[in-house]
Image (cartoon, rainbow over all chains, first blue to last red; front, side):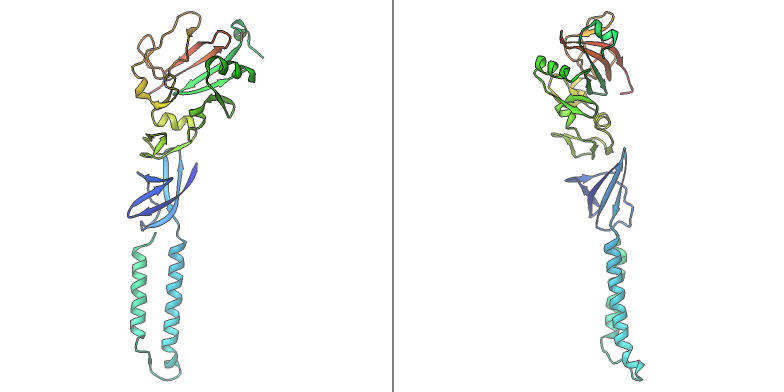
Length: 104
Length: 161
């Protein structure tokens, strides 16, 4: 069995300086860096998932910050005063949706 | 220690060829040097045998479409031993050219040998050439008479090619 550093771009997997054909992908199929594991005539491309998780956690953190700062005034007995509150949440939701479509 | 059979023919270095991969098994290291001096070809140590340079350097994996040796593209995705990778990609060591080539380059060759207790060859037999019955041989087991620089075939190997 051998393991090669590999990359998947626009559906094409490259490793060892060239394209690798007939290689199944063990993932969602987005562009990614990963590894190819090959043993005899069986091989598979495994993308590195940690960038997906890292980005997800970053978005979650941003969301919590936005909500916390937005409702802070309301908790003090007033209205949500940030005029961009709704837009910020919408932007984050959009980023989450885009990330879901690009999962590796 | 030489077996009685080998002692009959003097120095005997075992030569096994499987699917175009040639392996020399000397009884002692000096045998390799003797063979190299007689043939002007250097052999290279690989695991428990000696072989030609291009076979010693042949990779143990291939990706279809990528160069597997020189400018020869691989036919299959495969990882295993160099012997397996050579076979899976339909390649062979080409004795005449002294390098690795596609098997197809030797398909028209016919083996020339003398019949007897052993089939005696004046040169190293080419794998995937045709025997005298026009059967394609994928390999053979032989021993080298280093003194006479001849090759005595104990048996041809015929596999699904």
